[in-house]
Picture 1 (tube, rainbow, N blue to C red):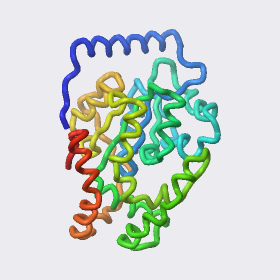
Picture 2 (picture 1 turned 180 degrees about the horizontal axis):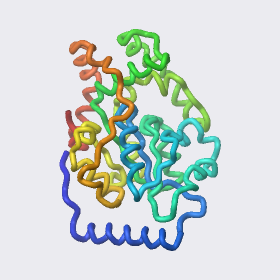
Picture 3 (picture 1 turned 90 degrees about the vertical axis):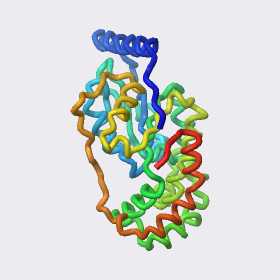
Picture 4 (picture 1 turned 120 degrees about the vertical axis):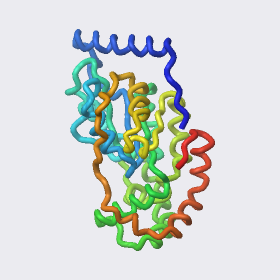
Length: 279
């Protein structure tokens, strides 16, 4: 994916913002009922737990102890006062964030986020669509949420998700299969990311390949640093390997992988043409 160094003007602007945050910290100034400045929205099985651990260790950032708050998905009916309480411990001057990987897929979430904060910054980690599909399936099996064999589960997905959108758009509405059996649907990033682009603009949505983060690619860290306008990560910053699967997907035949890739071809093409992302 193409990456361009920030201009001198942008660097001066970023430095000014950091000095402004430092001054607010020194004076103890922040929102009385604080909202987050940024959200990690997904994808599920795409490295969000590692991203959480990475950002939680940065001195410029506050993340709640509970990684997945699910306010904009399962608990929206509790109201934003309930949500803002999660950020009350944040010191003045720190950027406040939250990471819930269900946010990217859930169709009602972008509008709900925009209603709380129209200038929210969004971070999306994307995993190879086929590998993400398989990882979610085996994750559901380990948690006893799936009893069907892989082929049967994939074939049953459309029927399982039927009527889900009507349910999840109601505050507090939950749909088990929409969350747990959406194996192919969650991998269709071309249907999910445009909802965020349209509301927040492309410049407020950072999209990264999780592979680049896990490989220790310094550019991935630098892009996060520049996007959030935080101090640089130390050169020896480790990337936590959190919540890894048990390796079951390695046994899936190549024939099945190729069939899934064909089904997800529109997603691969959109990522290539729109975001210059490919695997």
